[in-house]
Image 1 (cartoon, rainbow, N blue to C red):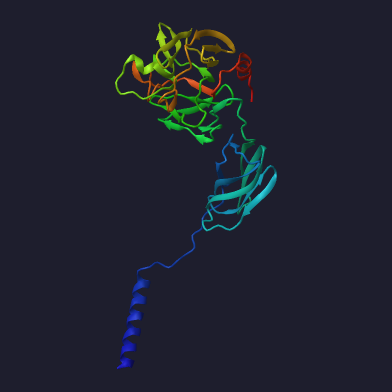
Image 2: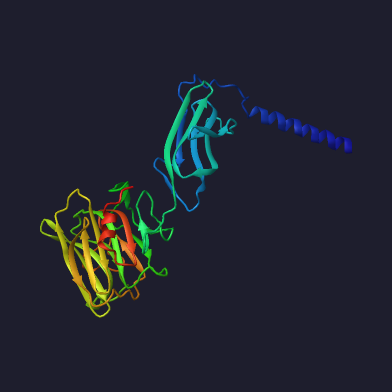
Amino acid sequence: MKILKYIIIGSLAMVFAVACQKGIDPISYVDPGPDTAAPVVSISYPVEGTKIRVDEAVTTIIIKFVAADDIEVKSISLVLDGTEIQSFASFKDYRRYSGAFQYDNVENGDHVLSVVATDLAGKVTTQTVNFKKIPAYVPLPGEVFYLPFDGDYFELVGKKFVTVVGTPAFTTGKLEQAYAGATDSYITYPTTASGFLGSEFSIAFWYKLNGTPLRGGIFAIARPYTVYNDTTRFKGFRFLRENSGTKQNLGLNLGTGKAEVWINPFLSIAPSDTWMHIAVTASSTMATVYVNGAVVKTAALKGPIDWTNCSMLSIASGKPNFAYWDHFSDLSLYDEMHIFNKALTPAEVTALYGTKK
């Protein structure tokens, strides 16, 4: 009986083997053709112009890249500042390799990264990017916020990313890159950190005016409101623009607790392709507006700005707390924004106006 069982099992196995072979074509060599193209290399990080700014003097980066070839990749070499830091010669997918390599010794300064791919025919492709490791930012006296807009939204005093709403972009700035406003787009950031807001206040930044739409919010630290009335503006700080014929009026509104103070306009100007440096300082007795380092307007204050319930700032729009009167998104350009919990001196404003990287 056992012998019969083994005979039946063996016969079934032979039947299945023959059946399977009948349904499968034999493996045969296919000529891939001549190797006519050089490898293709792309680097996804770091990209050209990347700036790495951390507290440590030496830091780590993850180099990310892809190398592909029409026939077969033979080898890949990572070269940093002229020295090979890693090589690859074994690939599961011999036509395309997506790699990531951690390098732990990036020091301050300018760096050149090259990814070099070689195929079986000896053809070589090199992709190169330049990036920088920048020393940690040292805040200026009284500085609580600094957003350089150099290709990212990292605030360098609080050392965290701001919140971005919508789809703004970056473009050529006054100093390297700049924020380019877009419809329904703006930035927010909490002002609740200890010492962020005080009895004195200053803001300074580069600005290139775009007069479309006809009105826009430029900057605001304002309290939320549900029902509009004039007392809404008795607290906080608002910076706006509004059309006046072919020109734009730039104006300010400050709340001192029991009243509001208008400085509007402090400048009336036609939109142009010209950068201007704007600084506003406010003590408990005086608000002063500077344009390109020179005083253009002052206003007496009966007390400091009242920041009660003003827990958020917004850039490039009046939203979410100063959106009435059509002070929506501003399509202008912004660069090098500094905020202080002190009233800057004329010399400090001049120094910011003259800063070059």
